[in-house]
Image 1 (spheres, one colour):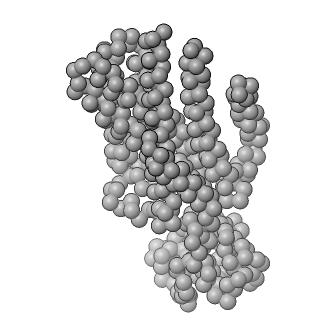
Image 2 (image 1 turned 90 degrees about the vertical axis):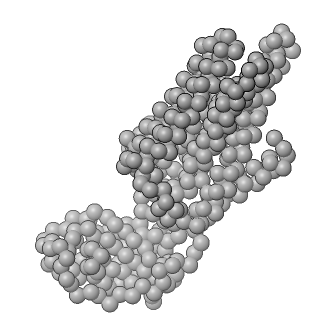
Image 3 (image 1 turned 60 degrees about the horizontal axis):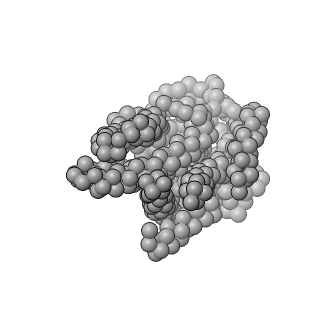
Amino acid sequence: MKLWLKIICISLLLYAGVSSLYHPMTPGGLSVSASELHPGRNDFTFTGYGSHFNDAMSSLQVFVTSDTSGVYCAEVLQVVDNAHVIVSVFLPDTLSSNNLGFFANNDLDGTMFVESPLGSEGFTFVKGTANDLCEYKITNSEQQFFGFPFQPIIMESIRNLMWHVPMWFTMFALMIFSFAFSIRALGKNGGAVIAEYDLKASASAGTGLLFCVLGLITGSVWARFTWGAWWTNDPQLNGAMVVFMVYVAYFILRKSTPDEDKRARLSAIFNIFAFVLMVVLLMVMPRFTEGLHPGKSGNPAFSKYDLDSSLRSVFYPACFGFILLGYWLFTLNLRMKKIEIEHETTH
Amino acid sequence: MKQLIKIIPLCLFLLLSANLFAQDGMEEYFYESGKIKVVVAVVAIVLIGLFVYIFSLEKRLKKIEGKR
């Protein structure tokens, strides 16, 4: 690997690693203290995350929605500090839905949103109930701070995007290399040329497997604290596990074939099938099924709305950086394998 | 270096067991200050994985160096 590529790799990873942890989160709603709402007056505390309730007190407004049509303004009783505000809201007997949402808005933070499943006793739910809309106006829908978007369950762990997802991108890149080398190995006739390409393919797949394992473990940890389980039945997860096992099988196949030429051809064919299987399981299947991974199910044309520009500014450098790192490790692995073979044949 | 490598699995087991003992408190521990600790864990796993790979490369290299 050329020196300038290494320098690019290191600077991209440094930039991505530092800024993935350094950038603040944009303000967001964390929770509301009420456990249930009832007709009449309700007092509760709205808790924000990284919010500026105190600094932007004059423009602060809080409202409760029961639906897109039903908005009820809350009176601000007391701003405790930047993160807590005590409000009181009057609700009628009839609501259009029990899907309650809580909004806070001010000049500095923009709109913050909390959706929590609260008990709602004593209400009559009539769909499309007309109600007296309160006089709310959103003074500033765009928040003024640069930072990663705050989302209720994900919270700060959105930063994992720059660590978990590039693992899979890197694995993909390395498996594409491996696939290309395997195809070229099959197209050659001379034994030495086949062995050369076969070595490259296996070195690339080996390094790819490292990133696959890292992706699986980091994904499992992330899933535990956002989806609530170490492993879920998401199509992407099961597909990734199958891909991992298929590539492990590739190495078992290599180990079990002593004849060099036969091994090269067999494993090249296996590798081509493994790559196709990976594309189907990780790229195609999740689009046809419902899963937990955001932006995966459905039409990819819409997924461009998923990624905030602040995330993109770090995510893409992280991907390129990790792919270059993967390539770097692949070259090291390949050189090591060559020395090992050379050593075996001479001694 | 060899001693260091021997210690690493022990350290990992200790970390793991500490987590297992704190199963009840684990949720709160990781949810503290907006789940930032999940990020710390993930970054640590990525770095540990890369270092394990480098160690394995070095081990292979040492094997050849030893034979020479």
